[in-house]
Image (cartoon, rainbow, N blue to C red; front, side):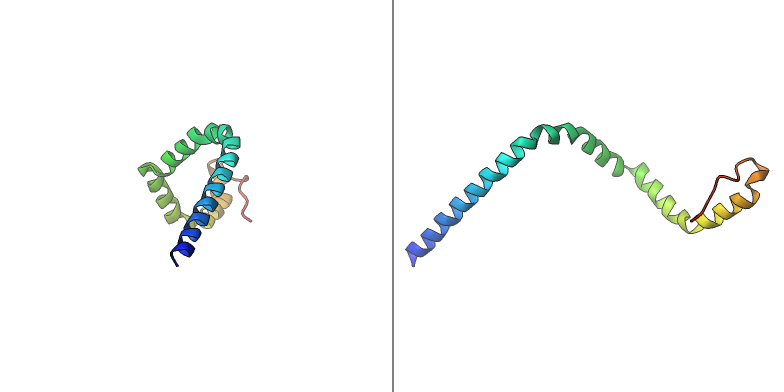
Length: 90
């Protein structure tokens, strides 16, 4: 029984080691490309988790039910203030 458990642990360990080496080989090839995008990803994360972004998204979510109504109003009365004509709803 003990030799079976030991053989299993040895085999599992060797398998894990081989998979780790394979993952390292793949990641080492793309390391330069990954590091090239690192700053951009960090900046995007910082922006999308800022309080100003959350407030903006909440405001857009509250205004979204009225978007088509506002579009129709701009089509109908926008010429009065010079902003009509370019709006289309699909």
